[in-house]
Image (cartoon, rainbow, N blue to C red):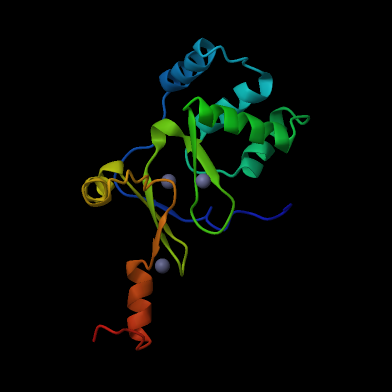
Length: 172
Ligand SMILES: [Zn+2]
Ligand SMILES: [Zn+2]
Ligand SMILES: [Zn+2]
């Protein structure tokens, strides 16, 4: 998988909500880990630092590359193991933006995504966006959905307009 960059890294559009973790939140996460009896190993501390320093979605490989600039001997399997552990402790979540590898971010930054299947632009949407869908899934099926785990795939406004220009639309 070397040299295989995430196809979804380039374009992100944020729909009017802030994703800027503070130093306080980083301290809080670290103390939560400590009180869970966690061994704060160097790789894990670096991983938490990387996750807090830049928001956004990174694959395990991208996070490993960042960590390796500080600690070259940290292996990708160590990063995977630590991500799993941080996820179990509720600090990190992973999600799937498309066909590529899973991406990781802080649990406090969890949000939904719309991804265009044509130009691959990502639109980040606040969690409340899925509130009605969530209620209906419970009411109709008794099913508790997690709409943040996978992106909702479709066509963005620009790509819909392009399709109409080509006479590709069924609408008119
Ligand atoms: Zn998953
Ligand atoms: Zn598009
Ligand atoms: Zn996002």
